[in-house]
View 1 (spheres, rainbow, N blue to C red):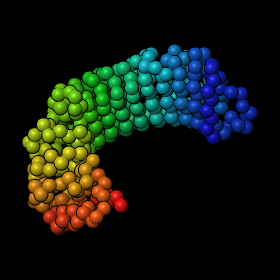
View 2 (cartoon, rainbow, N blue to C red):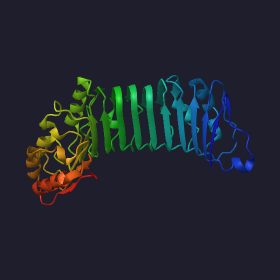
View 3 (cartoon, rainbow, N blue to C red):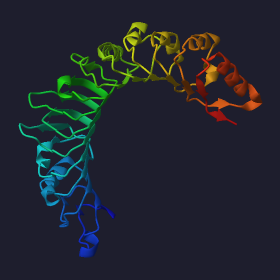
View 4 (cartoon, rainbow, N blue to C red):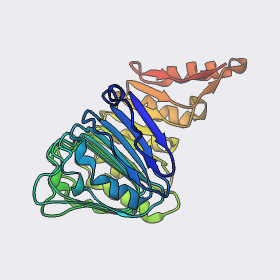
Length: 342
């Protein structure tokens, strides 16, 4: 059972005991007053708290009442307040944690905190710093922040396989602390250190993208591709620009089998990828492919699947004829996927 309460102030309502025992998900919204967690049922698993930062911080002191909590979301009404995640140490069953619109989020500790935490997401925060051992964390997503620091003598993320860093002004990562990383996304991160990224031999999936308005962000995307280990097999490029991504950067990724991009200008560079099997063109239909593009694709004997996301209109049969003509130019074993509009 899920329960949602909104008032000013908000107080967890007094419910019959037989109802309380069946509440596993609770959403509370605080106004200018106090938010009081008074449920005594310890079976609560899912809790969402929204309100002013001071109100939320006062409420966190009572979370020890819910040792069975597995998912927690803490969202400020405005970007404000400093959140020290060490206060959540009593939540030994917590697996998913989301924090949004805090001025600063901090997690530091010499001992293991949140041992069962598998997913941590921080969004729209001023800054965040993590320097702790999180032995079970597998997914770490951070987006829309001024600065993020994943560094320090205590930082150990031995099980982390997915790291997302998007729309962050300054990012510092201690790559040696994430030895099992498999998927990395870095989009619009103007300042990001890429030293020691190359030794991450488990990294197989990479997503990069610049901010079209910031030249320094193009530089960072290039540096990530330059430092990426040869183990990368899947690459997605967001907001590809014709003035970005020299061919030599793709040549380094000799193990690449799948590429997703939203600009046709990348096609002439694909000859440097001898193992490429899957090519996905976002935002375009096959009608945008020129004869020159088709000639480049015809020489890619490893290509097995060409997918175009943009819809192709079928009026007058021109769209179908264009698809049929392109199929004749593709390698024999390559299939063409193109959404059609009647």
